[in-house]
Amino acid sequence: MNYDCLIIDDEKMLADNTCEYFNMFEVKTKAVYSRAEAEEVLKSEKPRLILLDINLSDGSGFELCKKIRETLNIPILFISARNTDDDKIIALNIGGDDYIEKPYSLGVLLAKVKVVLKRYGEAADQQEENEKTGKDYDDGILKLDSVNKQIFVDGKLKKLTAIEFKLLKYLTDNHDRLVTKAELFDNVWNDKFTTDGTLNVHIRKIREEIEKDPQNPEYIKTVWKEGYRFISGN
Image (cartoon, rainbow, N blue to C red; front, top):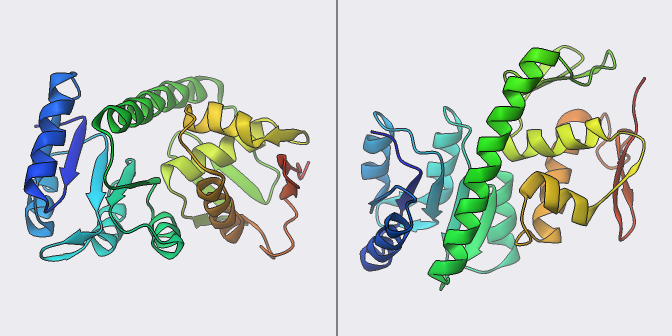
């Protein structure tokens, strides 16, 4: 059985309340309360999105995220009472798409989840369109493959999360011009919830995969306080 959202959180009352609220607003949701239970569920069920707590009773949400990322490329939103910048950076670096602090508003969290689900639905539609047109960036060194959501540098496969691929795709589609942060929030995340910190971490991760020297990028240039410019290799 497939779900819109799988909640993995050992705070049972909070997880159940969130699950009930989401289902009430037609976001089909299931809650599990441990890493072991989550791993068992994911063997046979594929949610479209995961809400994942960091501190689980039988293990680390960070480690579970790494394991999930080995087979699934769906949105993973961390939910946690831990609010240090280090935790947020780790969460995004290991494959998380966003980080939501507890206590959270059920209404705001639902809005966030709906936006992400809509975004990934649109991404699937865009993939179908790309299959028809074959329109992807390829300068002989960096190549994007929208059908399989993959990138290659000098013929070598590099790993990006779904949101990082979409971010790079938007930049390459709009190469050689300034793309503002606001434009990226609107067109990549499709929301106003995402922070500069989240964007910066994803940009850094992309640079680590595609740039010869991530500290002196040739492809993705930062425009101070404004946004980014992708410099085409063609």
